Image (cartoon, rainbow, N blue to C red; front, side):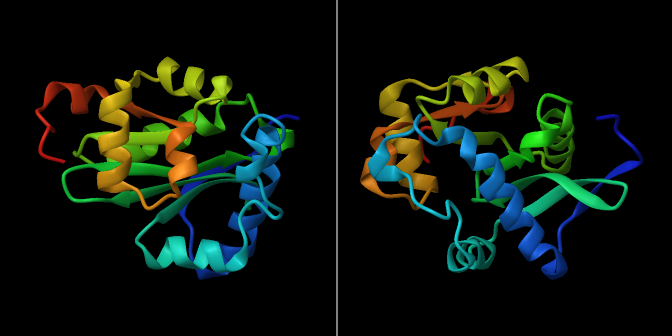
Length: 175
């Protein structure tokens, strides 16, 4: 599918259902990959998305011909910014949308960026590594997930954290 006119924009309240639909569509790639006890339908419920927004996750989307094709959240957590819930519609994957959104959010903050994802999602890890992120050591991962995320212990066990070059250039041992 050819890409029409597109622009990156902040998602507003009017985009709530579209953001959730993109997350749930994109998350289908994780079905059968992440542990079964971590999978649920829908992957992102209305209440969960509302809680993420209330917790400061700000979503940005790439709109093609006015319709959102991908979304990515950013959350200010003090010393760092987190990339949260990065998803592209299944039909639009591998077209550069995720990379454009990531580059936009990188320009939007001077803070080091951390990204958590499922360890078994090798394609997601490769995507971030392609964009200059590096995996942190397992003990650092556990410390960072405890300091900056609010996720269940089982998700901590089965996740990895990648960090931007800015993170490695600074001393963040204090969390």
